[in-house]
Length: 170
Image (cartoon, rainbow, N blue to C red):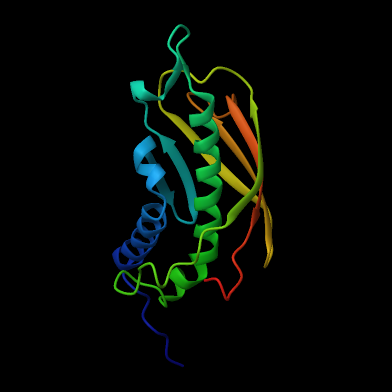
């Protein structure tokens, strides 16, 4: 019985990073807002890097509600795309050379998103994680939570429903 030698960890990390970069580059608004992603295995944490342009109410100061909503929705969309690609990334069928607009899945379309603003978003970096409650062939339901200094004290949360692209659309 022969065992195939596992790929070097740096090759796997490069493939994962390239796939995440390709997903993120598909949404130009991510760059405009200054959103970044931290990847630990298959888990993504979205980071909204603070800048003065994100303040909606300078008197408080507080993050703009639209920025917060866009941050939560972007977190959900990238998480759905990431989960869709995960098996192909891990199998090696998708690598840095084959990644591109033709090989990436189309992004899901937002059906609706409900944002709960729990407290003021302070003028500092914010973090978010999405949890996919259900993802089928046509529909996905995602819960997103955003926090700043303490993950146990979220400043916003959202629930979103998304129309998944059909195989003919990919």
